[in-house]
Length: 291
Length: 280
Image 1: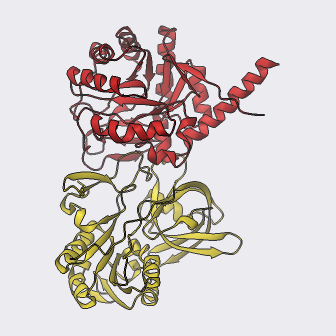
Image 2: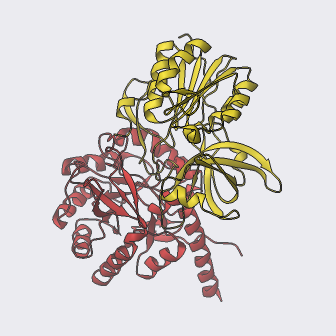
Image 3: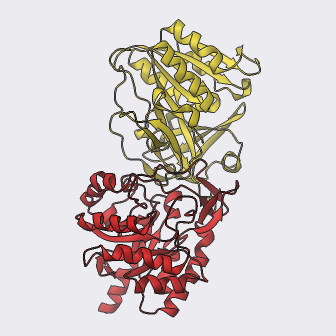
């Protein structure tokens, strides 16, 4: 039996499968490529890129907690110019579908990032990081209120060429997620990514995010809430997905795709493996349809 | 200091993520020497590289260990040996495992020690279990005709890696312990300057605590030698993905930067590390 690639449609893009990396968990792509071809993934989502380089925060940045990681990395990245010059061309050379995650300190910076990315050849989509769990300390535009999130999305959307979709990545806050999803979709987002780190704290009290299997049931609940309230919205599920079964539960709950994040830090082959297992599912479905 | 006597590290082979097996465990002093089967990993080993192990499914951070030895073991081909001090949740779990246990192993990871182009005098300074990568390094250096001397340091005799093995690997060995239970009483900082002078060292290799490595880098600088320091930091992914293990360095352009201990290191040129800021 040959495993035919079961393409999916996300935000108008045709992707080879429903498994994407989650921002900040795939390095520059080069490190991850050692463990599986990037062109076998639905898309490679970059770490969040800002207008200027960010060195990242003090140590310790990441600590283990039961079934999770608490992290306050401070969003280290080389800035948009360096990213476009060195990292993006390499990713495209690998045949990867590239979704660029962006984060900014102001609406003006969001617009400027959109203009630069809109001119960059090869970018498949922009993901606006509206859920940085340590935004209060890292100088990131505050998007705790849904209308702030919508402001960031429309600032990006307005300055992008038509046909370059915007994904909005939302925090898995079950009380606010539906309202936030509705406003960002109204503001021009093509799809919502539901699930990022939950706001938490490091033992020394610094604001941080909690990720990993510990947050998975919460993320899944958020996906179901958004699906029930906004049945036409395209949802990408994320949050502690570590196995093909985890991914299947998010897809069954209405997500069209999933992102693999923390699992990659525990097992760098996890995204490739989950993608391969889901491709077998899709091939079986295909056979059944043929029969 | 004349032209750089250190070869640029050659292109690395990509690391592997494999299902390995704990083949043997042996307690030596305060440490456990564990032998692992990890198909394909030993063949890619270079001194200064390390492996990351998974500690069950619910502990998400990987645990990193220097590769101490690569040697064949009947029925398994080449195996790797690591040195573990059971001090935390992960290391105690590992050292309590029965042989035959399967383990997820990723490696070899990181940038290895750069080797001198010519047969020069080298001093290798290893502290406690971190001395592990220096023994295979000594072997490679001797094969190149280098004169190899070692400083083996630790808090007491139980926390030293085999001084006997050091004497086989090196032309001269200086042993230093904090409590004076064996060798000289004192620290790496107390002895490193004298040894570099005595051995007329051209290249200095260090592996140990940040304070000792700082002393090694400073002594090398003062003596006009090149230094290669292997920095140990708590790692999360160990593969370069998470950007958790920042090491403050000065780039080739002279600009301060944060490098990743796991992927840009763990071996850094001693004169490139901003030692006072490591771990902050």
